[in-house]
Image 1 (tube, rainbow, N blue to C red):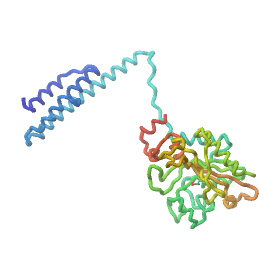
Image 2: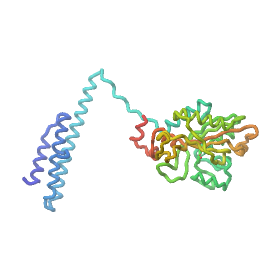
Image 3: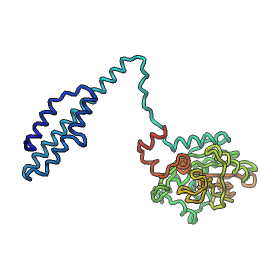
Image 4: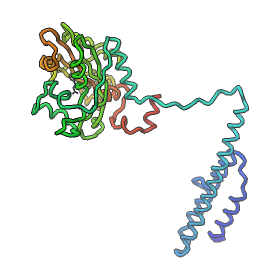
Length: 337
Ligand code: PHE
């Protein structure tokens, strides 16, 4: 028999088969379209077909394959239907659970952070993502042409119209201080934007939780205690350290590091073999900021801190690429159910 005749015979055979259950369908699949199936041999015969008939032969074999596949699919569907029908008749069988959505990991961690700070008396405040220069920069002691503006690669919507995307949620804190007298104890969770090159560690949009506490006699010790409490509640360890740093809106300022619990300080790629990972910045609110919003800096002091939610989520769940948060890949998101 030449390959054309073989194909005809196979087609005949495939058409005649009756597949009544899932086992039949599987046996059929293995026999005809499995990796060692009969169709494989036919495909292999292609090389002996004269060139002018290759196309015709190819079409014939493809048709065969499609017929076989749809037969298998039909059989599987009808056997699945039959089996659901069966369990439907068993009234004592457990119900089929509804598949419900899951929270995004950023929201899970944000909610957790909000809960922790709530227990210390912080209330949640929000502000607009589209900001003006005053709230994002000038009021925060970053006047025009201040070199530290370069630290925050700003997306301007319209430079002349004074519209930009906030680079931190400190802008929301200015808004609260403008309309509220101390004591003020707030956190401002939210999305911020920076014109950064997207990589595994940085994105042009991310989320922060910033905190602000203003009252009489607020000291750096209060700030430290607040951060210790947060670290203990969030990570189960208050092994954090503060490194002197600079922010225009705080003085003194510090960067907050937490000991790397991914490697237990033995050195890994997450902590860049230093044993510590940075989770945010903090400091005592600069008196100039208080004066800018009409709060008497002789009478009141305050502390502020800011943390990136992505960074904390990555640490908490051992996620090594920030881009995963924004891709909406179900395989990633479903792991947080
Ligand atoms: N606003 C700072 C930032 O986004 C973080 C920060 C907040 C630092 C409060 C100190 C005090 O970079």
